[in-house]
Length: 59
Image (cartoon, rainbow, N blue to C red; front, side, top):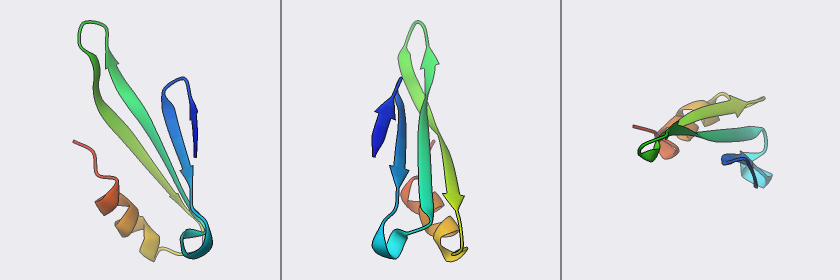
């Protein structure tokens, strides 16, 4: 896990090997963080895609 300039990056290990998740805050100058954008990166195991989207759902 790493955090740089508010962007959170997660990298799966062991049974989650091949999974990467990047969470980027959506910013409003008046309100601050108003939400998150999620990018799930999957290599080699397409079953992880839906699980990633379910677990790291954003509104």
